Length: 325
Ligand code: CP
Image 1 (cartoon, rainbow, N blue to C red):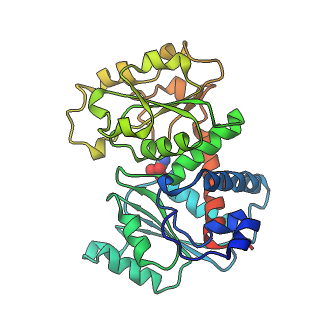
Image 2 (cartoon, rainbow, N blue to C red; image 1 turned 60 degrees about the horizontal axis):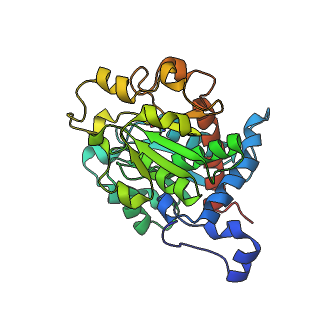
């Protein structure tokens, strides 16, 4: 969590550990402790059931206002934040670049200050610039949640990924997790590297050598040049989308070649453990980094990741916006 904006007394915190997240920002997994992660995942577990009810609503955040401020396209993150807010009875307001005065040249800072003047209780921000949520968090009194900033972090995605793996495997520590593909440009990879290593999983990265981040050695993970050789050992294989919008090209010869060496298909999966989990944050490039048969097959938990995204985002809104009594 980033700078503290409000918290209870030390005694209160000892009695109610979840209280220490109240009023804080969620800017990256790097700023979370293992205990913070456990609190978020445990809280999400208790909220997951709400989405299976006939009336999918609890009064927890009645009277609160959540602003979803998205400067980049999103299907899963924006929708699930909106659904999460509504299932907690908060009011959700969505703002995108094209529908705002940003197109008239207003700056991010001025826009944020104007939004804050309307007294929201939380701002969820996605931006193409790494560090944009951090800048906003310094200016705003209310919690800011990073919904993805450039190639830096996507903390809520990593939390829902950890939630999904923990739910399926019953644990996180000791698991072997592969993150494969365009690691260099992926904020999902970065947040998952921080998250899974923090909770004691063994993280292995693979992709074209041109997509190996320069800082990989310092991250406590292992780099492999071959996805195929890694597959038999892994408990979890997370495929990454090629981020064509964040690269100038030249990282691999052709998509066909990329798919042949770094795509996951049924043939490659034959050597996997029988209980392997196949994950992808979406949106998928079907037939490039993952074949349709694998994406829709029995090992895939891709749509369960999406379902769990609502529960994890409900938990975060509850913990940060002050649902904790
Ligand atoms: N995983 C993810 O961030 O998807 P969206 O871009 O659709 O939100």
